[in-house]
Length: 260
Image (cartoon, rainbow, N blue to C red; front, side):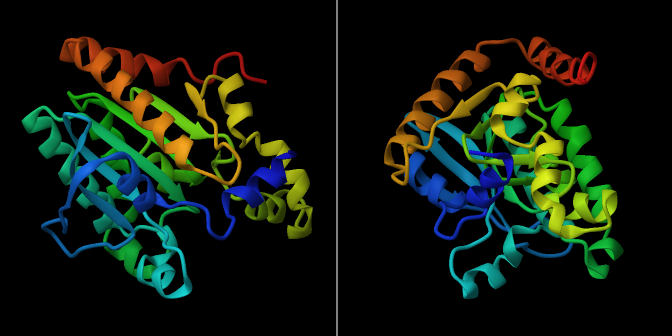
């Protein structure tokens, strides 16, 4: 599959969303609402659950399935209160010693006037800063689109994984084509240039793992991901908090040098 084929697959109708992964991987999920400042952003689902016997905090960007649900979820594009809700749950996880699992699937943070008025940039920046020093294990999984800062705000983690047909990029291929060539029809060329596929990003060491999708049946994908998450969180839970934070910081500091 070419890069643009991956883009199409990541956006495909019927592709599992964040709630599908929560339902099929975790037990006893209890959703918690609100950011204690403004409201409850439906594009972000957050709460507590059990991964096998391990209590965890789960955060997902949810875009919905049908048109009605997509509108309700704002197509997975979070407002600042969504990122603040996510951070609130992460800080509670830190307080009670629960690992954090994030599922990322968004074309980007919502860029409307109201979101900017309520501090969209500041909310994303605060998440980046706080997640870098969070004193519990964190794993983020890109399950569909990973668009710009809206995705990165939930992807500062000890390990970042991607499904094999997910994408992760600083800008959409359409936006890139419009800027570089002044022609949005050059979206396929832009997709290749952006190096946004899981295979590209693994090679560049931006991510640690690619999760196979097993064709159109995600049942085995859920099982594989559940096992991988459990083993990784158990392993990282055995690290001292200082070592955990230092390794996370070093992970991001080494990205970039030597890339062409």
